Figure 1 (cartoon, rainbow, N blue to C red):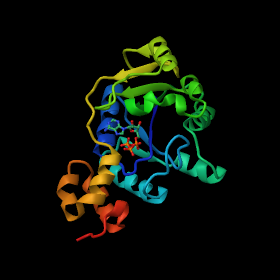
Figure 2: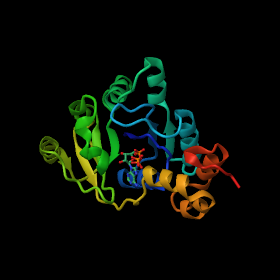
Figure 3: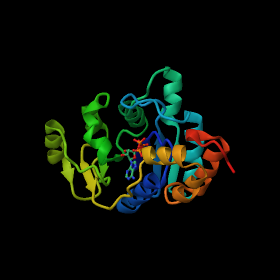
Length: 219
Ligand code: ATP
């Protein structure tokens, strides 16, 4: 099975890492690809540069050999000079692995907005979708997505190459990058204590070193 967990990771935090490890356990995976989005078509411009976000992702993934940082989308966006889309990543993957079981992992907040994604219906032709229940974002779906989800829902690890929706019930952490950025920007030196539960130490050290997200002092 090939499993992709895409995100802007701005910055990568314990919510992402815990989610990725939970998916590895639930789907019995040796590896999950942590796929960095360069300039996602459906999102506002993120806070740190793609180079910084990539280096933080590499540092965070060093904690667990199952977490593999993947810059495929960043490279494609550079080549194309335009946003790269999830559906294109999956199409490229299908050229290499036409018959593989592929899973695309996303949180309930992202899944609720799937209809805003480029060629979103084709996502179901190219991959299984694994949805994580994020605290604060219940799985209330717009009508068409609700119907598709009901039709395609499975209860166990998908065995088909694509087309199923697995909603994992495992509890997720109530952490968002928005909250992390807010704390970093506002808490100054006090951020360190508050941030320990939210970020791996190596990522926090990196943020202070490069003064990202409005962190002005590394003292
Ligand atoms: P932001 O607050 O800037 O929107 P974010 O914390 O949602 O960022 P992203 O990089 O946008 O992080 O998320 C990438 C993917 O990870 C999305 O599918 C998102 O739903 C999921 N995700 C983010 N945080 C969590 C979490 N705490 N638990 C489970 N999934 C998460």
